[in-house]
Length: 101
Image 1 (tube, rainbow, N blue to C red):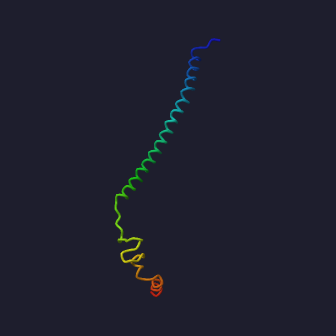
Image 2 (cartoon, rainbow, N blue to C red):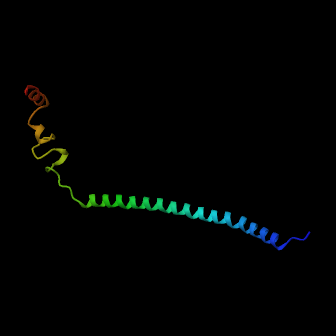
Image 3 (tube, rainbow, N blue to C red):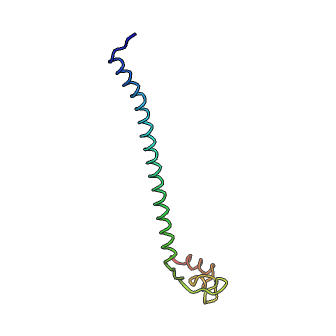
């Protein structure tokens, strides 16, 4: 059986097409997946750098205490309560709030 050159050419084109199209699609898919992974890694690294900058800036900024403290958590007045509570007992504080109109 003798094949014509047109049939031979058509079969050769079909064989090339069958090999090239899936290979190209596989290559393109792999490249897109790699690009997505790299984008996700970039977002993760940016967030990591941002958080390290924030912790670095909070460590560099000295925070002044509102009032000086002595040992065992007491203030300079000798009381461990904040100043607005040290002069009143909790019962007198509640009664003063209840007597106000």
